[in-house]
Image (cartoon, rainbow, N blue to C red; front, side):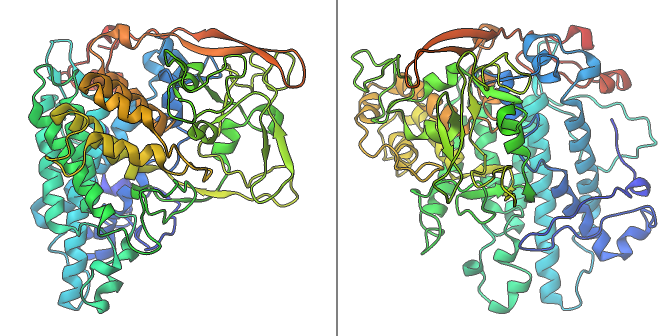
Amino acid sequence: MKYTKLSILGLVLVLLSSCADFLEPYPNGDISSNDLWEYQDKVAGLVNSCYQLMPQNYNDNEGAVLDCATDNAVYTSTTSSISKFAVGTLTTGQDIFASYWSRDYQALYLLNTFLKDNKGYNTRYLVKPHYNDLVRTRLHGEAYALRAWFEWDLLQKFGGKSMTGQMLGFPIVTEPLDPNSNINLARNTYDECVKRIIMDCDSAIKYLPIAHRDYLVTDPNDKIYAGSKYWGRMDGLTMLSIKSQLYLTWASPRFNPENQIARWDSAAVNAKKVIDFKLTKDNIAGGFSPANKVEWFSPIFPGIVFSSRYLSSSDAMERMFYPGGFQGDGAMGATEDLVESFPMKNGYPINDPTNRGGYDPSNPYLNRDPRFYSNIFYNNETIKQEGTTTDMYTFQNYVGGKDARLSSPSNSRTNYHIKKFVFMGLNWSNSTIKKAQHAKFFFRWAHLVLNFAEAANQVVGPTDAAKYGISAKDAISYLRKRNTYDNATGITTDPYLSEVALEGKTKFEYFVKNERRLETCFEGMRFYDLRRWSTSLTELNKAAHGVDINKINETTFTYSKVEVENRNFKSAYLPIPYSEIMKMSNLVQNEGWDGWN
């Protein structure tokens, strides 16, 4: 395991500004580990630098790219590591997940150094005792919170059934291990890891405010060291969100074969606490409203529970998603399978037995759920630059068109391109190119609503509101009627939601899973959702589809569904990095990765 010594932590970081300058200097080679405690900014840096280790956008293997190992998307390059992973040909030298193992343990080393013997808590940061207490208490809470976050990341990525048949997590480490010692750790059980993360979440909650908001600070003079200045740091809401997601995963079929209802209940309870805070305390004038559209480019979007630091000016997502004809890379494309999951504008699915939504296969993009138009670029769509009436680009995905699949290495293989996260104010043809802020929203309002709906349905069914104050159906209705990313009106009249809720738990479970798919597409979440829901590889190894399009005239086309990529997963779990298996004989590999043992 690659632990980084304080003596070599002279890593150059690009420190980004936010509401607070929270990334202060962090330990470097000029200061020994013993002298570190004499420099309060360096001590604080043990905690603060861990924020920078988190991803900052969706253009990587923890975000949109990971959807290319699901039925949501296909990566354009067949020689890419993610494509090889999806078709079962990934080698030990191409492991796209090994760096996350190293990153997470690097963070744990720093945090354990801060927490050991309460040294970080007992450091004097400010002269005035009251302000010093505010700072040290917050940092102590953040250290526990960040440790829980990186532990949860390890469990979600590397937890799984081992070759010995036992469900294992990661090696729990709560001490700053000496990198010069003979480190040979074993993986703890999955349940032990769950309990460890919950303990760290609960410890963090004892020291952190429920949220960093000025109106929660009783003394106005304290706002220099408390309140909204620290928006973007770990808080109680983030801990409740981690617990909700952790319990939801632990409750799911793959990790809960006995279907212990208490786990579902804990997932619902923790999600509901976040929902209640947003609906009551945070629902102030000009603040949060469940009807708010998601503002991907706003660092203060009220629906954020916890997000990464912002990249102040970036066109990475636009380059990745736009086709070559519009100066993009066309690096990945949405599948026909995802497109078919979007219902019609009145909420009925496209495969409704009596076609109450009016789906027309000869004109498949007409009158679809308004969320479809916020997520997908499709054939013959003309887009305009935000704030103008001028046509910016028309997608030609038909055979012979500039954006057609297989006609260029910078065109999607599915004949769909992706709109989510794309800043529509950007046009590379302009003399002055506008770029937007980008970040990754780890937890937002919609995620907790989805967690609650899924878990509450398992406990009390779709329509019972007595136990939690709202029903699973109530929760989903928030998302269905909310304005889209483009600020288009959502599904306001929704008879299908009422209909499917009355059909009972099983039908509603399928419905919620589809809503989760639509809401979180390209956020890197479906990969883990499919695995926690599934009980066999058959459920994961389904072909991904695109569409072939032929042009009849300027407005008429024919569409045929085509298989693009066959998925061939040998395991429902990610591999423990091969290099770590080779270094530590006590580590046990996950099942299905025999060649990596």
